[in-house]
Image (cartoon, rainbow, N blue to C red; front, side, top):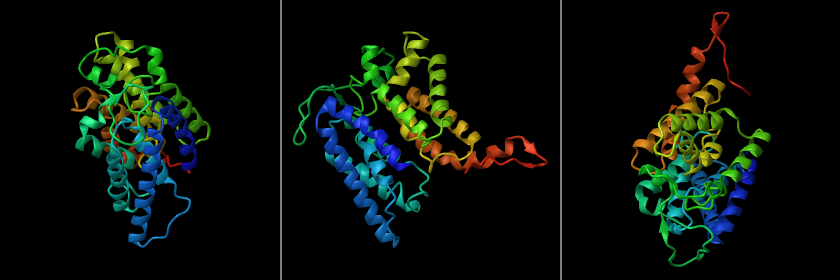
Length: 308
């Protein structure tokens, strides 16, 4: 499962390299190294044995930089990676026991501590220096424009290809959709959560548009901007922090979509999907526990939905 996620993330880094040069690649290596080293230290301190098949630190290390601008300092990447392992994963027991998605928690931590850096983006196709000061002009993303009630002045084709200011790995819609199909084909993720999540966000955007350009245009820009689709494919589907029953997954995707759109409409940040993920992670055990009790009863007992 982790290997499939690693493979699916590579095309997004190829596009980040195309748009921003070598800096995203170095950020990824730095993030992965920090996650792996912190993970090993935590395992050693806890007295456990290292699991050579545990690639979760690699996945977290690759996901975190893709949520960020290509211009963030390496110290921020280091802080987020350490926070993901040291605070979001190991205090709860390590692999398989963490109730919250580590990458979502790390992004929320960085967004609260350094919002000006997390939500300021450079224009794609501007090669950034790998080290040293970055003098590139920083711009707001389409998600911020929509938060102000405006219509993003970006060509729809560029929106699909990720050729606009935004998180360096979450803007290329076509590549993310291809990654989703790959993960579904490999049965690495289940369809219920991402499709229900996206459908709920689309319905919410259609019924309550934040822009004056029309309902369908609102749906298009809501789904194409920010980290919404990326999070729906790579983060909400985390099997450790999401429900195990089908009814739980459907409810999880629906509620996550509702909370995400509410954060977008009323939250203080332009992007709230990672905060929504953390909130839904906390509710995931309840969905698994109580929804089967509401399903149809068979022979006077509860028909369990748990799948192997």
